[in-house]
Length: 256
Image: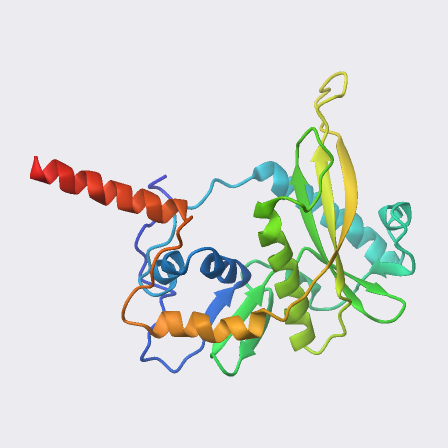
């Protein structure tokens, strides 16, 4: 892990004396909501949580889905998945900035004038309906026995992700449908044999987003960054509990 994880970086750290904007990605917003202390350590002090290992199969599914939808985007035709789930008069949205919106290093952005935070997010796909409303689409992949849903408590992050994307497109002047979709691919394990290929059940799950929470949150994020005193850890944060337990046992060892 030491080959790619630098626990204490010197770049992309908030400087309270600077007048430049500071980037806050969709994932950093979620980090702040999950634990303000972890966000402060990351954005203000440059000590990020250890990264998770990349899910290469998930990335492969994302890439193949984008290729499939792009073929139909060029033809201005709907995907059969749309009709299978009763989504009518919708086609993949063609736009010159689509590749940028999808890029993890660029994405779609909006500079909030009150907090001076540059909010960024990289979408998986965008569709458009007959009303001219954009529909934000996110790809998800998993492998589980039960039918996939958005009902798990931990999936609140997926919903926030959708809402941030919807908010970003509205802030960029687009008319956005409140209904977004998750293209959820569930790897099948009940097939007779592997045969060097994975098969998936695919669900198209609608979600009605509400972005009202975002703008009131941004001043709180900025206030957290400006503070000279770190905030209290979130009670349920596993990372903070681990750090505390590690400090405690080290102190006990020193006393002994």
